Amino acid sequence: MDPLSALAEFVLGKMKQSAMAQWAKLLFTMGFSAAVSFLFVCGAVLGVGQPAALAIGSGMVMAAMAMVVLFRQSPLTKGLMVVLPEAEAAKEIETDFQIIEKAK
Image (cartoon, rainbow, N blue to C red):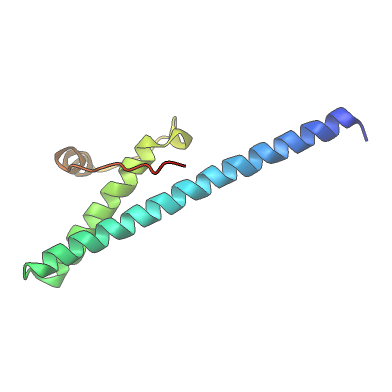
């Protein structure tokens, strides 16, 4: 086996692993953010005595918005086309999301 092709295979394998790790990290971040957003909003709405359906619906909207914010921020999704309802964009503009990035 040619040493250059072995090196190229090694480098390409590392790049593929790195891309997979970045996608896995994005998916974990989206899932975590969606879950925390849903639980916070749902709990807050239930806490003030509103119906469960309203609490769950509000939590779902907030979870969706959190995932879209992360999707738009990620360099992995640059150039990907998605279709979103106009109401989502308007709701995202009026909502103040805090983006927290932990130091490594």
